[in-house]
Length: 193
Image (cartoon, rainbow, N blue to C red; front, side, top):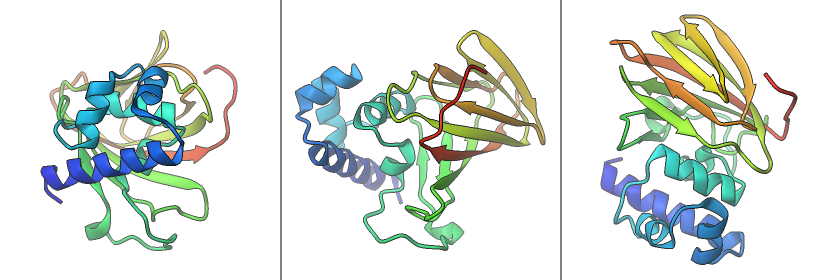
């Protein structure tokens, strides 16, 4: 899917999720801290949404980024072929994610494959409601994960378990692209890391 088509699909999906939640643009703007004008531009595909912006909107809508990027309106599937897995690229950082799991998997688990370019940094605000847990499994390269004031450096094969109750930043301080898998399970939060 080319970027313009993806931007239109993401915009439609955000608008649908906002409408289903019974929120006006003003209400979503207030909840998310994103301006009404910017939300409108994203919904109309006049602007490509960044990872940070989508994170704020998703947190305010109580949905995951996968709910927006997967763009599925179909019933749950058990299999998703590589060619059918949605891809999304953050226009600011070059961060790329592929939603590998079948849409609305019965297990409640989502598997996301992430490519973080050399020198890239992607930050997420704390998730306010309906927080979920995640594990990050490093496949190639190295990534620093900053969770509040704590920094964890991960290399090939390392696995980190964390939740999204605190601010999280993924940073590739190296000159080599990094690839990792994020495995998410909704509805489970726990104490500090």
